[in-house]
Image (tube, rainbow, N blue to C red; front, side, top):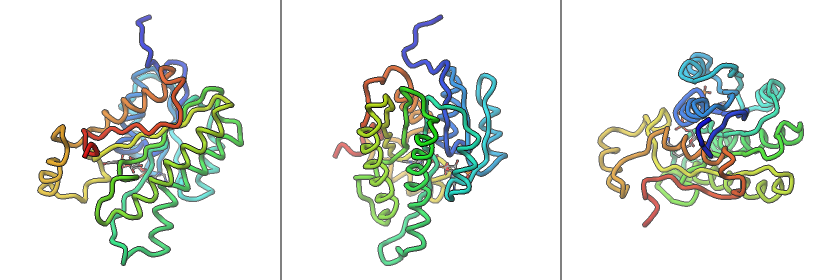
Length: 246
Ligand SMILES: NC(=O)c1ccc[n+]([C@@H]2O[C@H](COP(=O)([O-])OP(=O)(O)OC[C@H]3O[C@@H](n4cnc5c(N)ncnc54)[C@H](OP(=O)(O)O)[C@@H]3O)[C@@H](O)[C@H]2O)c1
């Protein structure tokens, strides 16, 4: 066998938001490193596309809307014990303060914060997290790097980071780790609303001169899921081409 400290062989990993973008790349790349995956999202066709690009056998799809408790319960009921969880499902909504209201704030917080928080609670309470399980939250540099119109999204990712740190502390003694990845801009369905001309201007803010790829975020997830990071918990791993350096 070849030496690989980042191997995921023998690990069972759940990926939310696996029907698109970063979650899809994480599922595919984890399968290439030997993991057995449970992938979830709402869209069966796009989940099957992810599955068809994955390596190995025995992976499964669970269709669930994790923005409500029935969806969360349905998902949890279908899960085997997990060595890893990646919370990638998320939405972006950009509105200036005067358009923020209870309904749109609740809708965004529900999927970006409540769903990963409650799913983690269900998994822990139902003892579906194995000893030494690794939980990875896909946060965003937006958690602390302000941009206009991004109030609600920023707040949802800030809450997620704090939740991650709290559970890293609480679950550490049981061997369970929690970390978050903070990507800068990555071209996916989430960013389709941004025009090409805006992107062309925006990339100038990045010292490395471009947006990231979903695979570049997937490699960070692999690092945190693997045994190479058995002593890493409570960290925020920024992957942003240098955006937040200044
Ligand atoms: N792209 C970026 O520039 C960027 C930067 C920083 C952080 N992020 C974060 O990275 C994560 C993934 O983003 P992405 O760019 O990959 O977005 P994406 O391509 O739009 O994918 C979003 C995923 O979330 C799932 N999802 C949304 N609402 C859901 C719900 N109610 N129930 C279940 N699944 C739901 C979608 O699945 P279905 O449609 O099948 O339900 C889809 O698989 C998000 O948390 C995002 O905030 C992205």
